[in-house]
Image 1 (spheres, one colour):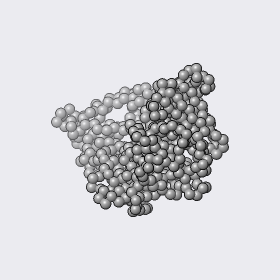
Image 2 (cartoon, helix red, strand yellow; image 1 turned 60 degrees about the vertical axis):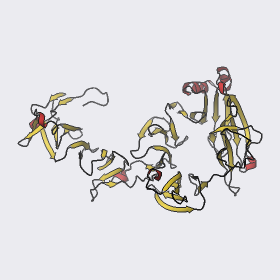
Image 3 (spheres, one colour; image 1 turned 30 degrees about the vertical axis):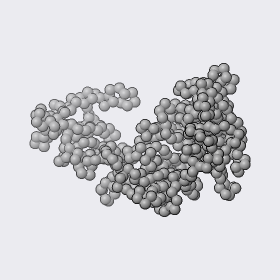
Image 4 (cartoon, helix red, strand yellow; image 1 turned 180 degrees about the vertical axis):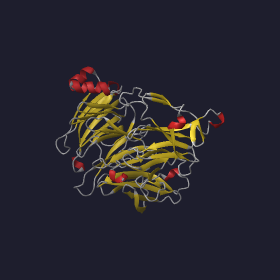
Length: 507
């Protein structure tokens, strides 16, 4: 037993590895035939109400009091039959011992028990007498066992809703084409665009609430490819592919490239929506810069109601361009403010300063080739140090600054660092999702390889918690306004909810 404050050896106790029972007493065993049936399988320490070691020997649960031991190293083998007291015996092997936070309750997990055989990681919910557990194999459902309920059977937790992508199930008639999720007035919503495999007809299904209850099932007259939900927008955008008439495209052009597509509602008071469209998919171009050359590989560096900053590759492949558009309330007001062309071999350091209030003032952009003398002329010492310390060998980076918040990305969108005032965290693994660049309480990212969700304090940027769902591989997530509930989406369009365990949930 170690003291966790200094990790120095605190005490040790020697107990038999194998036991047998004689006349109701548990004694050390040296019989090789009995070893597999009476071996020590699990131990736990209880020290809030006296110091006791709880130990399980196969089918026998018991305890040893260490309250009155005067030495830090004690040998219990000689007087084990007197010091080991039996608590419980059964006809199943005890695999695990779980103790509640207040150490008033002990739970045991039995081997080959039909109700428990496929569950693992059983644990008490903090500050409660309720248990959580989940399947050890797919579909890895999460269960809650309520010790205070009248019905003491294992029950599926209703707070863990799941919408599965049915294309993985070959017996299903539906194929999920696209899916989206958002919070509308702090209520979780998810939408799935599905197609019947036989009839080829499409449906739009809408789910609502933390349990993702199906509330609408629409039969669509046209075949759409995308459905999109936006936070606090009481509508769903459906998109379909149309063939391009090539009137805006270059003849005999073989390379894949991107256009900016800008559409708007018929109501002039509505905001403009910015989209990007692929040439080979034949999307219609609504707005384009007629004076510019052709580009491809469009990446959006920043987008708000008033500004759009993008990065593109020129057709020759050896030059790149950063373009800043200002967006008005009509298509005629959209115009290119500035553009910065640079050579591939020179690299690029770009700093974008955003106004603290999006409705006040314009952003500012400073660029420089990744060359020491030119960077000294363009940036101050602190910015140069930031680019140098966190570029991780990427010599095409941009720094997004808003007040004391700063974030560095590669020009193709990979996050390298996040900083607030003097606090900094660096990201060396691939991140698939950033929940919010300017969060209220937590800066949250999803790691690509492990599907782990990392929660950082917004101000100190200290790691608070890491969550890894036992059911789905989280790919993206978004939170409500106060970051008290999060919708999580897997790569296969499955959904779950993350929320804090509150006192009202566990009592």
